[in-house]
Image (cartoon, rainbow, N blue to C red; front, side, top):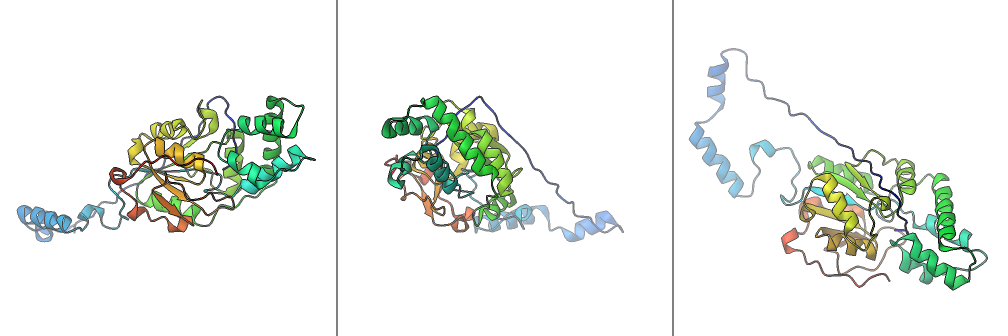
Length: 295
């Protein structure tokens, strides 16, 4: 996930819903038909209770995929999780700092952080005359140009995992440290706009990742307790942010900028297709150890 910036609040909540079909009884002698179809009330209750105790589903839940009862929402990071946008930020950095040469070892510690520390480091490291504010603006414009040159395809399994969360009746959110001027064009370029109940960007909080503020704000918008949320992250800063918010954290290492496995993640996967929403760690069993920080 790329270094980012904060601006005045902006969000994009949405919602989805569904209808439940009613079962029709035969028209002829409806009361008699109902009595023939249903077992005695006491026997029915005992049968359902025995089925649930044995690990089965309640009849009203048949046909609906199962998920941990403690999980109510899945919140995705954007850059490095749903799209592999890091090469885009890398190209923008090279254009901005030319003719100076930026190495990957120098760049990686700033992945997932705010823009200003990155620009302050570059100004001192390369001896640039422009102020941090001027460099921040130029970097923002360079990244925007890269996004608009799109398309930016979603990573394999991104659409499917979002759909799987929807099928389980979970809230779906997006929590990106990127500025809104990058987030919404990126979602459009990836064909993912309109996929989320709430969108939180770096513009919406004062303290950037690795502070937990952005994930706590997303949980509030979704109306879900942080402990009932699963966060899908990629960067050390993002993993720490979600873990310190009290969420179950899945670290995806699918993008080209994949970080080393973080100690704050409760599950580390090589692909979004490896995320099984029916077999997630329970929040009560999760260990929210603080990760070591950026590589």
